[in-house]
Length: 265
Image (cartoon, one colour):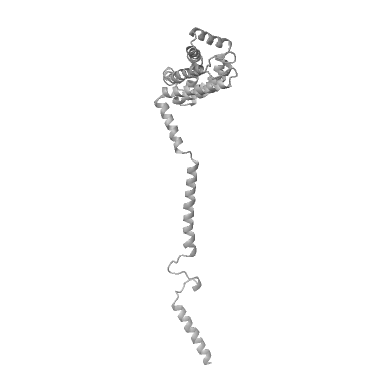
């Protein structure tokens, strides 16, 4: 009996000692008691910082990849510089564009022409002068200065483009754009101007020169006047006439080595 009393007393003392160092819980046992001060867990100490670092690194890599896929800034600067040059100096830009185009186009045509045994410098010079003067200078003046005055009352863009295309194809082409090509050849080869103009008339009547011109340049001019900015119209014409010049150079020189190449304007 005494031993049983001693054992009960010891258990009672042990329970009171444990309760002295713990905070009682209103709703549950001591095993589910929430501490009074926040202690960071293992996940808080390691997982969260690693998550922020990973996100920052991924964002940085995505930015670097996007920057690498974008076109370099220098190409954009070059394009803007070219546009400013064509706007500020349309006559000089037109002459340089058209004359350079004529030089390369006629050189390629002479290379492909089976009737030509060697490079004809005079023929190439004639086309450079003709293209630079008529296509580069005259087209720039006609398209950007004369046409806006002539068709100032037209407000519909489509009708305006159609009117300019028809005037350019049926008035400018037979009277301004095409005849100087024959005159330029006559000047370079010291030939009579009358014969050069007679050759032009013959090509129009018998060789279908104007029909070939209209088949290409009417749709090209409509596209040019409708969609191309005004300061790039001469450059567009130069690009189209590059292929036109090669084609007509080959055809025109089948029977005569010194035949002039006629290009559009």
